Length: 261
Image (cartoon, rainbow, N blue to C red):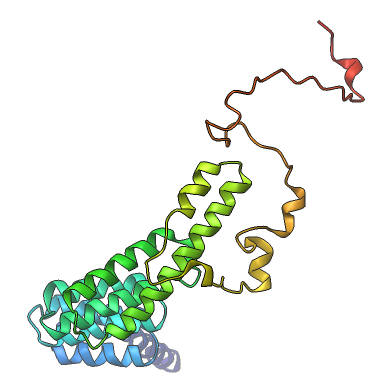
């Protein structure tokens, strides 16, 4: 009997000691949360790092460590390609802590985060325009910034991507029988310092090209009927042409089941 009691006591102690590790931590100094956050970032565990940052922010609202901690979290999420979260932390940094050179740096990081979020520019035309607006605003607000060469490089690549995308959209309108749309997009000239004739389209990997094509054609094009949809035609195309009913001479095996009227 005594042996059973001792065994149960040992098991209970081990169980309680294991559960004690699950107890949520709170009411800790600011440097404690900051150290935990930095360690989690170094280990690549951003989920824990976000939790430690939240504890630091909620328990120590006026801590000077929040300034640096917010920027660390923004850069960590950017390094792991979590650009929306990075932009969230950068907005928080600008709103609460950024002044002078710090604000300039955070605005540059916001442009960089948007730029890196565009691995395939043809899939997000709106983000291209938004990033270009951000780059233009940065150049106006910080004309002598040390980050200007990097901003100019990103702006150039985005302008080239935008010009290529407009050309692909125009080609699509051509295939749909909508010349007005094609002319509209071809008339959107890129900036004056870009020569449209010298733009070379990016090489699309074969595994993407199978589904996306090169912007002008696709491997499955032979399966698409060469017809012009009335809905897709422009108003001025064949506007004067008279539409006559189409009679089909094709027959089917089940025609005898269809009553004649």
